Length: 186
Picture 1 (tube, rainbow, N blue to C red):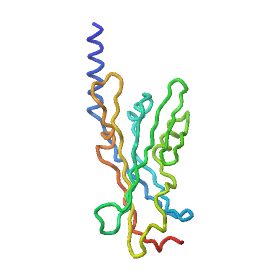
Picture 2: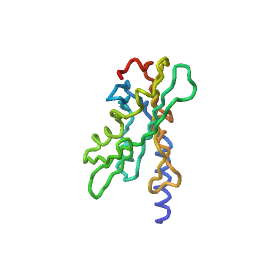
Picture 3: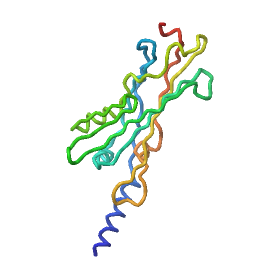
Picture 4: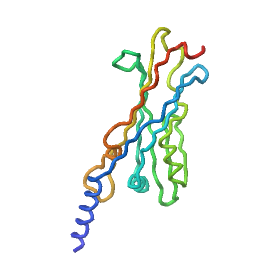
């Protein structure tokens, strides 16, 4: 009797996650600006959460968004420069708090509000990307920003859950307007 109950729960849990209604996650227009002699990037992922995804965030499992920022020349096929940044969230049922770790600042941010924690997960704020002096005078550049979610194992499931299904398995990507070294002051 008990094993039938467990089997039924596992079957129902698996069927719920195979019928995921994904959303069209996207970036807001990225902001590229100068801070001192550095180029910094700011952007935000929007439309990236669902009620079902919120329940996963409340499961206590670590959920990770990996951001990739790549600098291309106007006709370049390969990036001139690239960095990866991760934002991780974990819920503590004991403390009833969410902790978000942002790798670009190596900072942990704690909030009791899921809404605030999701903002910390989805925002890139003045990420130090490159030095103005590292850019070549006569080249035109653009920045491409993308994001993806990790896979997780939830209790009672026999397979990992690919969280990208919540984004319709599409990595949100943003390409900036072209810019040159002359757009920044030395």
